Length: 175
Image (cartoon, rainbow, N blue to C red; front, side, top):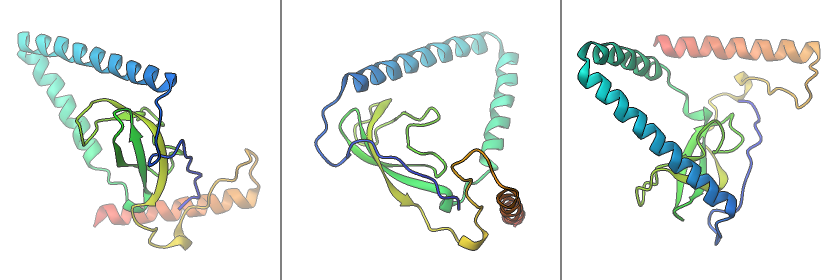
């Protein structure tokens, strides 16, 4: 398992005053939700008027869902986070361990499991740890160094570790 640096922002369990940035982020998330809902309504109207279009889109949706469902991320690659949401609730969420914080890659908000606010922007967070420890640290990929320049030995070690991980994943998938 690579050593990733996981960031903190604020302290979710302490009192938290929402900032201008938090309010702006929440407003943007609400606008995105509204735009997506409007687009979905337009697509549904198109599909209702054209059953063949619905069949084509549904086949693509099913294929995408099948592809997504065919890949299982191992629990030792999942980081647990404690987050404070815009709605003030403190909850736990999970992200891939390669993410430095839980707001990266389009996941800056989530549905609050307590009050149902959707979306509710993540305003503070702290890492809690992996779901489970890696099964065998010796077989874990060698972390990429902080520098952009890698030595030949570092590259060879990284390639060997990635090949071993690839073989292990293929074996798990085949079982």
